[in-house]
Image (tube, rainbow, N blue to C red; front, side, top):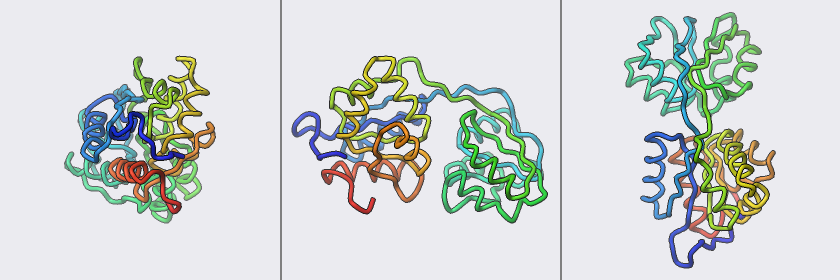
Length: 258
């Protein structure tokens, strides 16, 4: 847990962020800077499209803005299918593509999607279109709800070759906070640290930083790897995560009820 000290005396707190290596990492860094901290933009994800599109089904589940954009760019249309989106950003992207969104869960997670669709998909075919690192919670939960489920991988998530600056900063005690936006950002950071020979030192450094996770699954992954999470926002979106992390590190550490 952070003691609230910044890395350079009176300088702004240094906060690492791990969004995909596209406009999202730039937008994330700009948001953090607007909140008064020094962002360390260290993209831990790169998107590799597979060229696939969602298969035809009465229900199509989309779990990311990226998936929506790739499907739309490939010319896919939902037709008569009902669409479920994992959260507001995904839903907004779908509507921007001209599609109607029929379900958005209250909790923006795989478990939230299952809860939102339970009672609506019994006996139905459900197409889940997403990345190659999707949670089994969604597929298992929909099947338990009575659906016949097919999964299509729209894109693969890999680690950019040069990712890992933040691992070295953490190992040196030069990070005040980090904002993990998925389980994969956790494992990719640790993989990058291991390649640099600083994995244990990076985990130790994170123990002295404020650690934010976008939702419970990401926090659980961090805990499994020996990283204590201090901040999990009520809403599973980056803006909420950034605000919560900045508030915590600026206050000298996370609130007890965070």
